[in-house]
Amino acid sequence: MAHTLTRYTDIVEIVGDLLKVRVARASAEAPTIAYDDLALVEGVDGFRSLARVIKIDREQVSLQVFSGTKGVSTASTVQFLGHAMRAAYSTNILGRVFRGDGGLLDAGPELDDEPKIPTGGPSVNPARRLLASKMIRTDVPMIDVFNALVESQKIPIFSVAGEPYNQLLARIGVQADADIIVFGGLGLIFDDYYFFRRQFEDAGIFARTVMFVNLSADPVVERLLVPDMALAVAEKFALEEGKRVLVLLTDMTAYADAMKEVGIAMEAVPSNRGYMGDLYSQLARRYEKAADYREGGSLTILTVTTMPGGDVTHPVPDNTGYITEGQFYLHDGVLDPFGSLSRLKQHVIGKVTREDHGQVMNTMIRFYSGAKDAQQKQAMAFELSDFDEKLLRFGDLFRERFMDINVSLPLEQALDLCWQTMAECFDPEELLMKQQLIDKYFPREAA
Image (tube, rainbow, N blue to C red; front, side):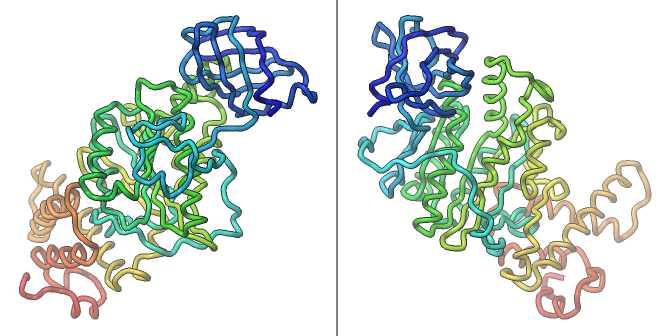
């Protein structure tokens, strides 16, 4: 109780959303204050807001006020709560929507009496992890067939503003064969938040979904808390309930921009393009929560990372690429088969999927690459061979049947459609595939 009884009134400085207060040295009457601890800021006019410790310099503590410092004066008081941010956790949080500060955004009953768990803890001990070996089916052919999503994988969707990345993320969440969906929205406009919620409700999965949402008008500091709360809850469901949990986060560039804004307010020395020097470690700390637990379920992380101006060398996608196990590249409304890569797909393709999966994947991509070359020859008015004409027809069918993100097919049906597409365009001897697979799967009637 000592923390709740200790009030500090020596407000040194208020800059932006940051407040600096001078505290006493740690003693029995003045307990130790730790980094990331929460505090309650109260103004003389009734203002109340949570704040978070972001810097400790001897007897001066810097706090970021959740609700902003409008209404805060040097006559305000600060109470340190003695703990970092905590999130409610029990099965009762399923089907609920939380704000970035842990409060409820929906109109449901309060959850004040639910157990609380700390957020932002370390990633799981590697000795407790299993090698990724299970596939998460999404019914998106460009993912399931060509870049399989694997349990315990951490992978972003690289895209640019204006692309339907939120629609793709929602479709994956709705169609993925996961037990629990944990959604984290970072700086969303209300329309996007409502879109995700409506998609989850209409698909009938909202009862096994937890949403943590920071809207664009909400305080920036809450944006920094959303991933930690979402991942803490997901980790609990995976470890204690043995659930296969899929975490969806959008947009991690907004998260990095929030870190940059806080760093600038703290007068920290920026690194690349104004971002702080710890950008990599801060992103990695969240992504490394993904794991397949030896004594429980699994935690898989799928995020959106927008690339300003389509620049893949921008600090956020550039650092992300070093942390994650590949990426899905979304542009012009389609998933690019050449820019996309899942580095863990070899753990499941042909092992937990159909025997022809690997050969079909490689052959389809080889033919589509040839189709792109044939398109260039056609654009430059070169004479096309009969095989080039076949490649052009294949390229049109490939884009129509597989690349559109609205296409939804179970994996086995998608593989059958791949065989049918190849049979409509090529002779069996032109496939250059294993003869036993051709004999078993090639649809002679389609040819």
